[in-house]
Amino acid sequence: MNNIIEVKNLDFVYPDGTRALKDINLIVPSGQSIGIIGPNGAGKSTFLLHLSGILQGKTGQIVIDGVNIDSKNLKTIRQKIGFVFQNPDDQLFMPTVAEDIAFGPLNLSISKGEIPELVKKALASVKLNGFEGRSSHHLSAGEKKRVALATVLVMTPKILIFDEPSANLDPRTRREFIKLIKNITATKIIASHDLAMIEEITDQTIVIYQGKKAAEGLTKIIINDHSLLESFGF
Amino acid sequence: MEHSFIDKYSDRDSLLHRLDPRVKIICLVGFIILMVLTPPQYFHVFGQYFLVVVALLAISRIPFWFFIKRSLIVIPFVIAIAFFIPFFKEGRTAFILDLWLFKLSVSYEGILIFWNVLAKAWLSIMALILLSATTKFSRLLKGLEKLKFPKVLIMNLSFMYRYLFLITDEAQRMGRARNMRYFGGQFFRQLKVLGNMIGSLFIRSYERAERVYAAMCARGFDGTARTINPLKIQVRDLCFTVIFSAILMFIFVGWYI
Image (cartoon, rainbow over all chains, first blue to last red; front, side, top):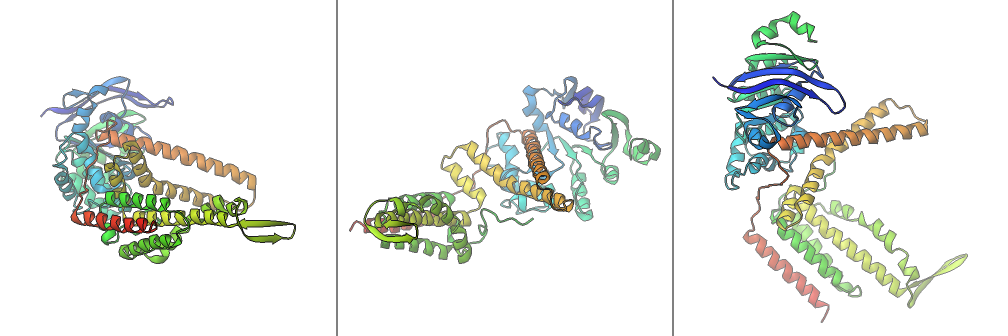
């Protein structure tokens, strides 16, 4: 099994001087699901933004599927990585659902004739058939979340990144959304405070604490190590 | 949360709703141009224009009172601009207002200009409401885009429509949170609080814009807006254009004879 993500010595300092990531190393074998847990402000979201090349650290190196992230090959990277943001209102910015889902494929220069079929398939995969013409601000939180997932799935990424996928969902919607995520075969990176979900979906878990990778291991072991979790704010 | 949308009633169904937005935009512009070119003294012609609007309103199934109420918002602006013209325009005196200290004379020519501005503005806004109330905002933008409107402008409008209500919600929530801890009085301190609220609303919107941009980049955005085109001109679009232009020309040429 080859490694689809390799992160070496990643450091990041925000413009205001906050040192958000300190010397992070991570290797993810293809097809695995990785959970990222840690208290608020630990640097989880910052780390995810680095994996997709939206933020780029001055030191350190990230290799995605054999390609080193730098500003020249971002297009290739973004074809490989799909990012489901925490707030679907940030992710759904077009007037209608169909246009939002078509946004990514159009940027990848897929021919316009194929797009409607792709949109339909993507909506079917998140069980929202017939939502093409709806406008995003009239959807419920659960529907928005699923459309956001569809906008990413339509690009058939090898890696999917989720930032707090289960936040702000009612219990049933949360269960359904988790089921959707579970059925996706791509490599998954999931940052969350929802330990039950992490345990259900992921194989490995890393704990980020104050910008550093504090612990790493099989999810089963990490989640059940209560003294470890407690020392990192859980 | 409940907001009155720009395109309220646009998800109803009628012939006007189903027309291609390009057709509607072109017909609207044509209607406004011809109407503006009509000299103001041909009152009956304006009556005919009004009949056209009413006929379209009937076809569109937009509630009558909603339509009238919305169209009236233009009146204060028109009055603010044109109210004094009847008093200043020189010409034949229509009547004299005796206001105790001084007298104001009102001229026929002035009244005619006032009528001209009022009637044309009102008819234009009614036609505009017919367009916006029968066309979803997204389709309207698509139509404008296909009519070669600048893409940057279209993008801007589409973001505005998408985020306007979110920002309104945010402002409302902030206002509520303030009211929960505000017990009246202290006017000047309240002004300062209001300033802070506006400032933080700006920062929040700015940060949201950065997150949205990140989401766009994550899906391969490189500065060029690429969009799909669901619009197709159909037979009914052509029929409508032909019939509508014929009626308009008939009315417009009518005042010559």
